Length: 396
Ligand SMILES: [Ca+2]
Ligand SMILES: [Ca+2]
Ligand SMILES: [Ca+2]
Image (cartoon, rainbow, N blue to C red; front, side, top):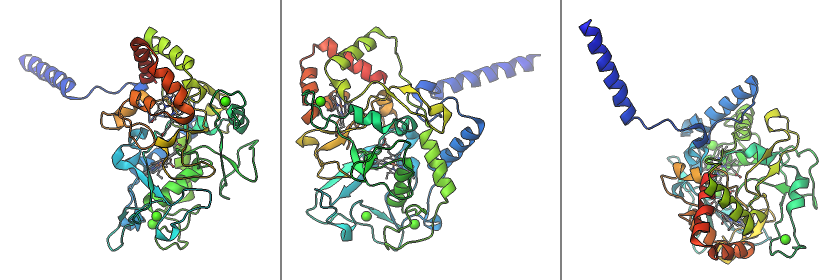
């Protein structure tokens, strides 16, 4: 009897002790790396296979890493599928106008700054301007992928016909032959609307993924078979099945869930967001068309982006062009998940394409060009309106 009681007490102490030292389990709405709701069993299995390839496939010289590379797994730059850190940036160079890349023989467009033993990593040619970009969060991408081209065109205003200072244009890109065109894809001069990457230069998640394997890790696929070092065509180092699983995983990562939606200040912060013109680019609501994945078909969702390019002014000019995107143009980043981005960034914010903004307010104050008016409107707000706006943004 006594012994049992002692055991119970000891067990209780252990349980209480554990509670104190173990960090609390994050709530569902604080996690970014789960699947969308409503996947079938087979779809969930494919999601899980893609999850493993994305996070646990760590490449080594034995299974194909490099010879020149930037990192050895997708997950090392996209930890928890959240935003990356200034330590995990990519560097691109050599494209300043529409004439194409001027430094192809010197390692452009992307710098592979690491190499496996016996090989020399690339270095930037001296005197060349370069662009450093921070990994974006990888959430809700399947929803963005399934918006129709017609909807994107409807939001664009290339000549600023309504004279509100905001144009917004799609990035018209060449589509690699291995990509499948979207249903009802709209083309202009043989080019199609890109939507992934910070300038929207990748047509779809297959191109983004095949390119990441090749350029970021030196892993060749049948889609991108040219070795970045020898420039020769080599055998695939991961299978097409693995690539498709990763693409499926990216497509079916859930959209971040807004927190504190019913808080009064959050709600009035959203009104401020709408009234000072933020929503002209960071669109509160988009809808998907039909998708082969039922959970993504005909859904309305709140990403706070229009997926279009905007002139953001000279101080955000990165001296680098992609597709039809100019050096000063950026695709509106989705703001969903914004308030959670610190979790994968070591407790601090690193916002804007290169992480230069260390708070939400400083990100707003960096908006120039088409974003200048809303920046000025922000500065003219009262302190309490500003606070509500920030509180709303943190709830995303
Ligand atoms: Ca390789
Ligand atoms: Ca290179
Ligand atoms: Ca306009």
